[in-house]
Amino acid sequence: MRVAFRVEGNPNIGLGHLMRCMALAQGLVNSGHHVFFFMSDASQQFCRQRTDWLGDIIPLAELDKKAEPEWLVNQCGSLQADWLVLDGYQFDQAYRHSLQSIKFKLAVFDDINNSGALYADLVINGAPNTALLDYQSTAPNALLALGQDYQVLRQEFLQVNNNDWAERENLTLTFGGSDPKNLTIKLLNALQKLSLSMPITVITGAAYPSLLELKNVIKNSDLDINHLHDCQNMAQLLENTKLAISAAGGSQFELRACAVPAILVVVADNQLLASQEAAKQGWCQLANHEQVNADELAQQCLSLWQQPDLLHSMHKMAGLFPVVDGAKNIVKLMSENTLVGEDKA
Image 1 (cartoon, rainbow, N blue to C red):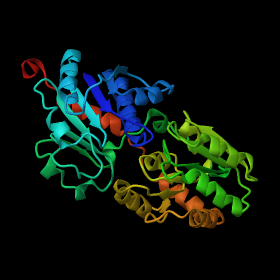
Image 2: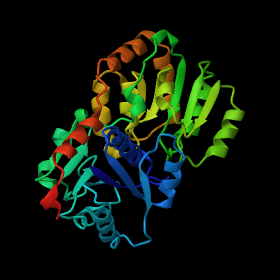
Image 3: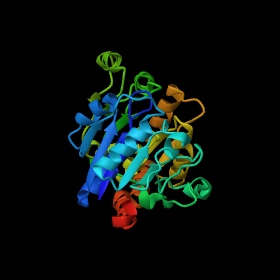
């Protein structure tokens, strides 16, 4: 099976789309399939810096948005792709409609089903609340890969060790690939006021734009801070984390896989339902999503840190949920529904 991806990630839209496509691509390659990525120069720079990236990268032609789908369809035909996987909020209803082809099938990653007709042969949404989203209306003929059996995780999170709880000692701060609200610096300044003594690991993503300012904050801080930029071994770090404060996107599933108690900060509407469901599971708390206040978040962190029994209980609750290889389940669906022979002619 040959699978092409059209996906983007940059400081304005974050890197979550790229990371979950990478997780699916890893599952495809592990099953013996061939993957390709169509992406812009900005996304290529991120991907080529990663040691775990795989698949052939094909640069986009310099076309306007209306002309791109036809070019993409032709490229997929030349590659003899069986599937095209689309992931990104900028690919709207008109764009998806223009990708219709009798030569390959279209899979779409989606989060909240708010962008009109999907025109997809397969819809992927690994969040736990997908029954509320009425995909039968927007993709009536599609296969539906919905719910936590289809939550994609990169391979490193499928091989976690989950060290003994007693060995965990770090507070970890991670706000995604670009941290658009610059919560990293705001929270560090708030934690500084509390004179905390635990070791703090600060992780910034490849698209984080405020590195120089952050380095100055760390240099002038009395806190015990270890800063890692564009981290390539997240699972190993999370296995040694006692409490994480994290953006509430796809990283919440990585935190749960590593049994990390967490405070999830909801920074986008599409994160809220899945995060509320995660909080009900007992392994994490939510920060005030209406308006994130760094001082309140720091106080919430301190309160949790001072309750070791509660943290241990949250750790055990996270460990009750199986780590599912959702990519493997999606690959199986794709393989069983590939066009063959005359169907592709």
